[in-house]
Length: 114
Image (cartoon, rainbow, N blue to C red; front, side, top):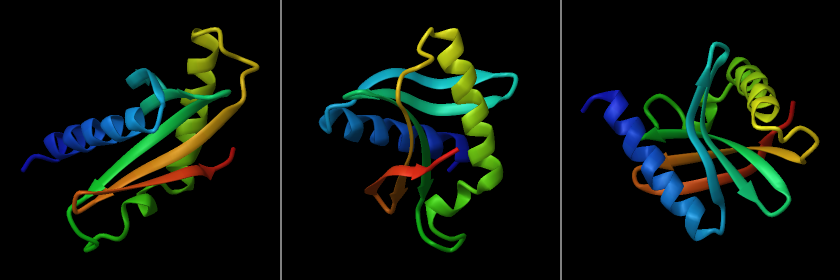
């Protein structure tokens, strides 16, 4: 199956999960010249930037391992731009990772910090 299709299905599953947890989805697949963020959501007082990673098995490691320091740096830059463009600077921010492995959802809250 095409990796883009797998990624899209993973994001759909992650969003469904996040909604059941009370998150309000603000944006999806936000992209700018600096990069892309899978999901932007509101959780209580936080604007949450969420990277979604899907794998069918661990042959290439856990999904969360794909969110290395380079990817984190990109996410932070795009998040800063999103906050500026959407007039949300000054709000508390959090960076989460939702990993899907063989259909199981694992939500890593506050997975990394800038």
